[in-house]
Amino acid sequence: MTKSFNELLELAGKKGPKRISVAVAEDDQVLGAIKAAKDLNIVEPILVGDKSKIGEISQNIDFDLSGIEIVDEKDGVLACRKATKLVSDGKADVLMKGLIDTSIIMKQVLDKEIGLRTGKVISHVAVFDVETYHKIFFVTDAAMNINPDLNQKKQIIENAVELAHSLEIHNPKVAVIAAKEKVSTKMEATVHAKELADMNEKGEITGCIVEGPFALDNAISKEAALHKGISGEVAGDADILLVPNIDAGNVLYKSLTFFARAKSAGIILGTKAPIVLTSRADSQEAKLHSIALGVLLTSR
Figure 1 (cartoon, rainbow, N blue to C red):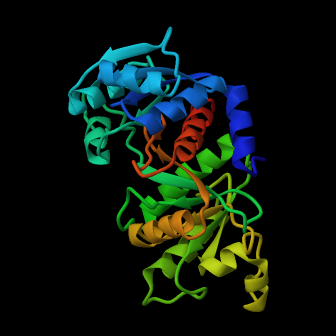
Figure 2 (cartoon, one colour):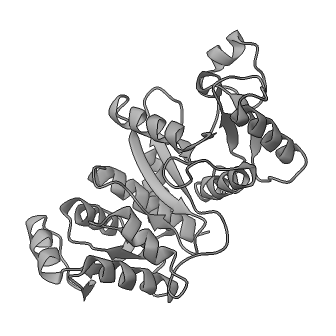
């Protein structure tokens, strides 16, 4: 069971290297992360973008490009298209967003001709390592699905569980988050939580334990759960936090990043291949951890 990002990198090193296609690679943080991942034997990169800028940045960070395939494409949209096609054609295992807007690369991912659709819900999972919690944990979905319905939440859980399994977390504990712990028909998130927990009991959601509704404190603190008389296997020990909507997820994500200074990683799931999709504001370390997630997913 992977409990820290150090263990995550060690596991990815054992599973790698995997081929990663980087769209619009001419960015110092992106290339720095790729260099670190290659040094750890996690990836073999294909860099798609402005070759001269890639070369200049690589020289500045002492990244030896000998033997690395570079696809010279100065147009950002075309670079995303070519990088995506490399994955859809089976020439790369993982797709990574470089110096480009998320909407541009996702348009290529969703393209019927060269895209990576599967028919499943596409969702984002963020992984956090914070000093105040005893293990890494997942937050989903803070970036893709705005206000998911019950069936979409079921698939979002299944995507996150697949990621957990790739990190050797074999029976992850899923806490369905709401503003309160009791079911109220006035609060859809609590109703969905009960229905998702029931699905898990009936075997409609497998490979994990799903409980809820939980307020955030009861999901991550055994003391808070005991104080409120909340029992169960997930209370105070959650691996996966399923948030009710993108607003709650985004606030939690950025609170952890900026207030708690948590280490983080992010990945897109539900596609034919993992997509490393981080914010341009994310650190090189976060990008490296995200690459490791992609490698572990494609190793399953």
